[in-house]
Amino acid sequence: MHISTVADVIELICCVALNESTRAFFNSPEPRWDQLQHFRGLLPLASYPSSPMRCYHCGLTASPAVTSSSNENGNAGRPYYKCPRTGKFLVFADARGNDPRNPPCECGLSSKRMVAGRKKSRGKLFYVCRNGTCDYNRCCTDARGGKVTIDWEILDHLVHIQII
Ligand SMILES: [Zn+2]
Ligand SMILES: [Zn+2]
Image 1 (cartoon, rainbow, N blue to C red):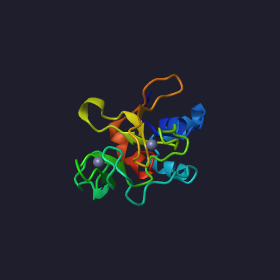
Image 2: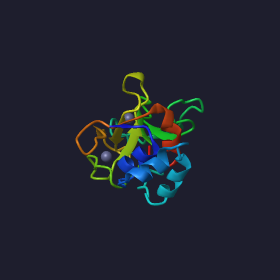
Image 3: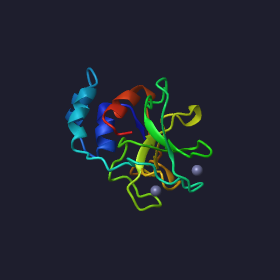
Image 4: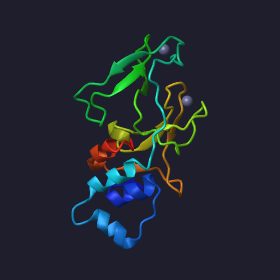
């Protein structure tokens, strides 16, 4: 499933079924991205690590860091934790994508929804551990088991309402 319109986002990510006229309302003539704001409060987000966890690779206390302000994958200036020894990325230190309905990671907690930014898999949604304490990584799939991808053009809207 490829997500490209406001109605797609509401249906597939917010799990709300829309009839034809409601779909038309959200999708045209100008896409009503501002309407997604109303769904923001309906989706309380799960917690995120506010202090450094132990790196699950080496056992040392993770180092806090912030992504570059020029990051083009919707992650500009985003706080995260990394391995103090290798610098390997562990987890973003924020609630973005922490939908409590996401599947559980190896720690038994609801996971964190993310979007792939690398060229080959750009726009593909996937889940990771929201606490940065296991290496869980699963593709986001729709009701029929298909991989869910987003139109790269709508990235900023989804980031704004913290879906990813
Ligand atoms: Zn480490
Ligand atoms: Zn985990």
